[in-house]
Length: 278
Ligand code: SAM
Image (tube, rainbow, N blue to C red; front, side):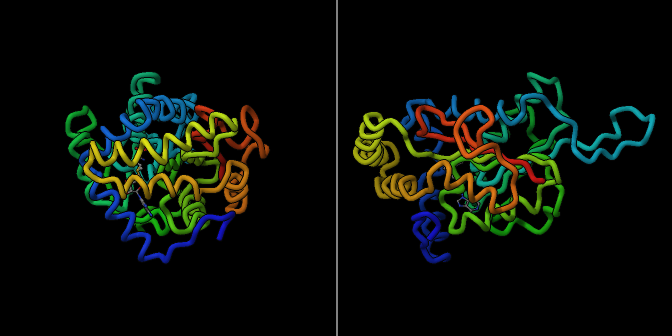
């Protein structure tokens, strides 16, 4: 085990994860709002803004000397376990609204066809529909689809997805492989709450309220019970930062906050870890 991360046999876990997300795909977005009281939106906004403080040019510009910006390669993002596109759409919106740029692409990779279908439906209602800016690929974080080449990605994101994967080192090493040197990784996941009182309240909330809400809103309490347990099993903030380093990423110091390897949101209910491929 990695830091108490319970090892479930590969096929068993993937089957389980598959059925969990199939049974919740259509109600997924509503459930996220209900369970987090809408706060996941703030976490995701902060996560995306921190990863794209500006819109950097693609790391390997295919630029002909003296030519205009048209010859530029788009900035390439990979949103793994991207589900219904929460992170991908935020990335594209930020680039467009804040930096007036549509010179950026996001490929969503997800293991679950139901989630990808929901994502496609959602994108159909946006101005990215039928553009190369957003694409959906069925695939596994632990062995990314072969068309995603080594050293080809500028920004890799995985939000609330890595905790469901069997091998965290495998996910991180794949991320490292596909990123360009200098490319950035952002992992958003449930962290460990630091304040003891807040921790107890959160515990009660997750073990009692969440499965009940799951039952009422999605008719399914077991999937949500599984989600709560998977949060408990996930490594702590410094443990996960160390796994990132082991995979070859440069991180900040092993602490929270500015200059640190991670940033806690809502007292560590959610945490964003970042790293750079050396
Ligand atoms: N990133 C989205 C968000 O933040 O709203 C979706 C998060 S959802 C909780 C987790 C997603 O991870 C699901 O869509 C699930 O299908 C996907 N997933 C789980 N294991 C995966 C794996 N090994 N490879 C790729 N996707 C995976």
